[in-house]
Length: 357
Ligand code: NAD
Image 1 (cartoon, rainbow, N blue to C red):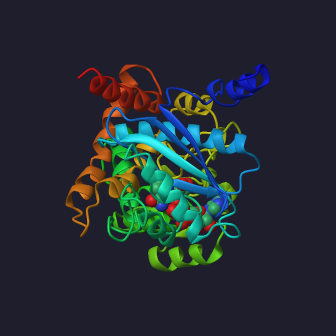
Image 2 (cartoon, helix red, strand yellow):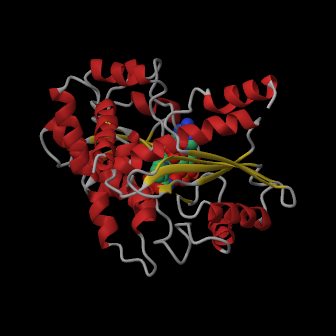
């Protein structure tokens, strides 16, 4: 191998800033179908690496690699903290899901998943439909969330976990799980958010809702007697609890000083723009439910769903998210740390315990 080749190879992968303890990173392609993908297996200490497959029109392979490395590591932490006997992995396919994706491409991806012999288990993520997963499943059994292997849409379980998490967070701050009369600002009335809004309404909360999609807001006003807010101002609403269920990075240097609520607990992924934002929330005395802890109901349903769909185990483990959060909050107070630092620690402790067995 010549010097140039070596340096390109190293700086591109092994010296990559997101390259941590990853066990296996596989670059796959299939010229016939146009498949270019990266499958990253971060950690299999607890079991096979479960993580979704994302189809996205990445600008370049470097961005795809960054995403695969970062997301697969995130899955190790999420699966560990959720108490699943599964490791963390993720696949990214470099393609426009609307223009370039095809059943043949997904089948080719399935053949590559099969080659990993069960060390990686794939599932749906952004840009992937149930039909795509059926195509993958024609070539491998290492897939979850298909009609044979799942309970269907994971969103109701995500919503259940978020609701349990909101109650645990309210209990920590207000001394009671009871949400009746609590003022809640909920941002994002999609698959998860609308369901959470329904549960909050039933529990007697007073809802202010926002979404950039106006019909969803009208539906929530009708169904739950909610008040509407400007989506850009959801965090500024006079509320006890702020529930972000839209997109990520909503908690940042601009928004945090404007938050009125004493609790932030919602489904959105990657809510903190930077780790410093978690510290800023703590300084302001705002309790933050770490996103990957509170929104784990979906992955729990994907991980534990069996053919035929017995949902008791899934419901129990999802409801345990409330207890996990309570434990996180108590320890965060004791250790003078942020909840997300403690969540990471607890996930790492479970891993190191398992690797010392
Ligand atoms: P979704 O696409 O069904 O809903 C998102 C909603 O947010 C849409 O109604 C959209 O119009 C709205 N929205 C977008 N930008 C907004 C803004 N700036 N202000 C207000 N509303 C805005 O998605 P979902 O499945 O409900 O997921 C919601 C969040 O939860 C996402 O961050 C997702 O990554 C996360 N999450 C979802 C699941 C799941 O099971 N679906 C699991 C874990 C995490």
